[in-house]
Image (tube, rainbow, N blue to C red):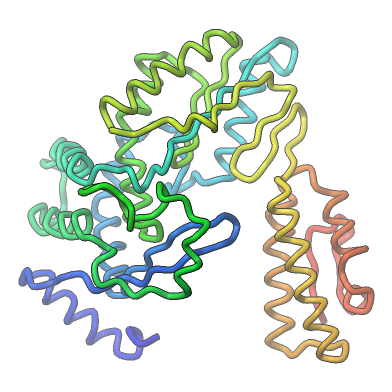
Length: 363
């Protein structure tokens, strides 16, 4: 809001700083996010986020030409829903529509963002963009200067810490930039970090697809899955993947997050549990929906059985956000239970609920 009050003036000033070479990053705000899992977040100053989007808009189209189709995070037309559908497709294809055996290998990288080598990341970006030098429609020197600023800055320096020091007590050291090794780690919370995370593992993606010849492979950030009809073959891939990550990227495969099971056991992936012929949402999402309804029930009761116009709008937006996501999966009974049993009966009577429990509105 402070930036937008005089946004034209602020944008012009920002433009002049970038062109003149005087632009520098401002301190980030650091805090702990507890939901859905505990994470350390560094939120860049708003003007720096404008620059992140500027850089992203310049370089992302070129990286899109290099990424494999089954890298799902922070990409146009991809995302979690696409990744879930693709894994379901992998299982159906490999098992020939559930008529023969196939197995799922799911792996995770320990403290991924905190382990990224910034110098190696920059070299990868520089090398990749160099392939498109003749196609570029922007000032390469200027963009590379901004990239150096973003990549090599230390967000922990002079950062503004929100919350209590006790917020960090349950956060593993491998998930905090304050404990990252020298020259390593990217802040979770920046748009550029999401793109850089894809760039850093792009060569590894091609290694799995081309050298290991894994046809059914997909990755979302640092979670990746491989589907194959031979269990022992998948088991044999683990040492090769572990060595490749360590020798080329200095990344460690998480030893406690190696999942290898028959497809009939179901697999957790991107907030869902994928089983033959059906996909359920994970209990974390169920609990989040239950908690949201409980909070709105409390507000409704405290207001004497009424909502203000603003609260009505927020209530319907919150409920329909959950319902819109849940409708893509096998959740009919869950949606009915939440709206017909958990929701306050007085609030339910005042609401208009779709017959299939996919939408709710207040008159």
